[in-house]
Image 1 (cartoon, one colour):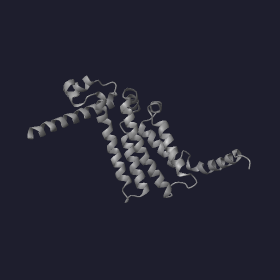
Image 2: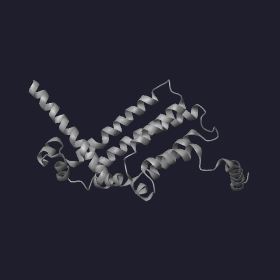
Image 3: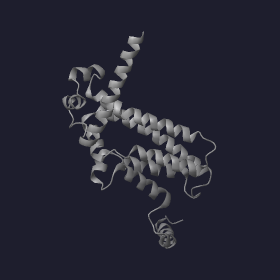
Image 4: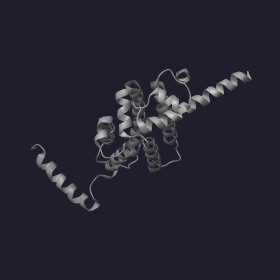
Length: 220
């Protein structure tokens, strides 16, 4: 019994070493640029030992990426379910969790996964969609509590956020943008909640928009 437990502990320790080494190599060099032989060599083990623990390189990638996303989802659930937190506190904590998730993920790495590991990419996208749904539910809560302008329907706020994320937080767009995925997400949130106009320009711009809208409206 003790021998079985020792072997299990050894196997778990080896899997942990493989995942940690793979994470560093994938993030530094890209998923497609790191071969199974290179990963095994970095760990000082044989490819046979590597493939005994993980059947494919894609399975290693899953072990690197998906647990982190699931851990993030649990943290989000904990924050959203905490009734002791005010809406601003929840929003700040949720944005921090979502931003931290993107910290070390470069646009090149994201694109690399989407091209060379499409099945894993689809699993990642499903996790992200679920996470965005949670964020959208928080936005809806904020609308109901009166934190957002009452003249803008909450459905519009939620759809604006979703549309911006879908348009900008994808591999093709991220490669073309001069910032990281974390910075892109933060900019989306900033524009959505604070706008892009300087404080002194908001009133005059709003007045001009109202005049333009009136001129473009169909005659009554």
